[in-house]
Length: 105
Image 1: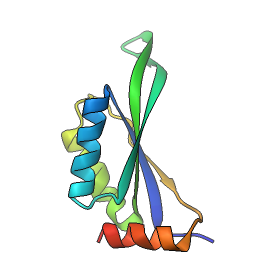
Image 2: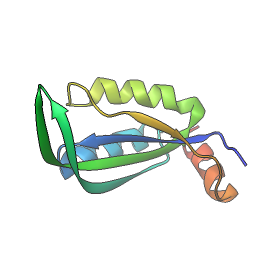
Image 3: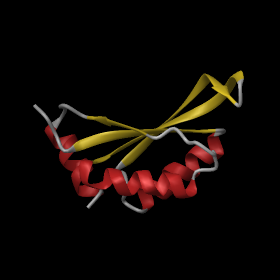
């Protein structure tokens, strides 16, 4: 079963920024919902390996809204190079996926 929905993942530097990103996305109907998770990221930036606390923001949206959501994140995100990854949803609850469609239209 394939679907027309995706999960768009980004990160934020703290919980307040993650909540602001999520609220703006849902209010604009670019995503049906967003989940916020505290994480620790290890990455190389400006030639140095860093370990930092971050907040992962996972947004459920449709394939049709993914490009607009990606553009929105690039416009409002405070990072120079924000993580923006789009992952297809290959199946799931038909009722839930229909709700995602309805909330993003």
